[in-house]
Image 1 (tube, rainbow, N blue to C red):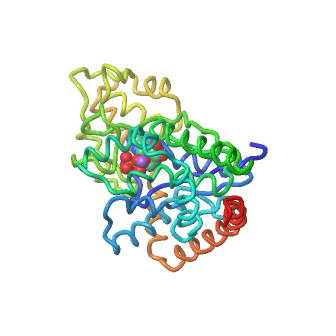
Image 2 (image 1 turned 90 degrees about the vertical axis):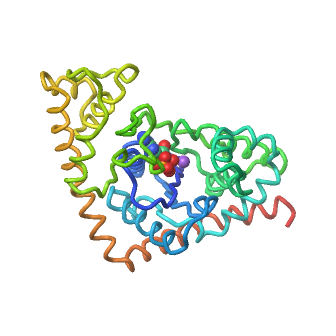
Length: 327
Ligand code: ADP
Ligand code: NA
């Protein structure tokens, strides 16, 4: 609170899943009320580091916009915008890329993982942490909500702020991490892995637009273990503990309270409780997404206005950068 500017981005992967909601979006909604200046970007430039079908991408961008609004992002409190519509991101990224060494990027864990997975990676995939740094610094952001998996990328943004400032004179504040203490939601079918959009297993991921029947089926099929009692011990009982985490988050109570509410219930009965809580919490969000999806023009107008406001903030910063660099 007080001063400060928050920036965060999310890729247009279509409708978010429960992990995105609890791990990121719920926190985004809270932050828009705590900081005077908040920017949330649908980062479509990042998403094309892997091939996207153009029509699908366009519809995923609008679905993400609808989802963010339905989850409670308020375009009056936060600037909600589409990254590619503010070309300053790409230009600053180029300049920062020229201040970044190859080994610095090669050592980032996500490159190691993703390029190995694909067996080869695009130049864009290699340099996307530089674009992330540009996203943040372009607005002189001071606070960046990140998951643990993104901390090293934020460190690159901090380094680049320092390197730029040293070479060209102070311009960028060093952005700090807002580490969300929020829960990690695990895959329902493989609770040692996180719930993820890219999980190849079916029934493993709850989308925030899943129907009550889908939710009930997925929770019923969730992997547990051979103990029927409900306890919270993520190390030895990841499946049941994941359900406790989800229940606690949905009912907005602590994990301890959730276990105590489960009381004498066995895991099968507890799953019914979890199902009800998820259905109840997601119902209004789902309805709002449906409503917003049917009004494409409205979604486009929200993004256009947000992108215009973002550009108003970005343009003077980039002008200053260009001048410092000698353009
Ligand atoms: P995915 O792995 O499904 O592609 P992303 O990597 O695009 O998800 O993550 C988008 C945001 O949601 C990030 O802030 C990330 O930390 C958060 N997030 C993703 N999956 C989970 C999860 N299972 N639990 C908690 N937070 C998550
Ligand atoms: Na990610």
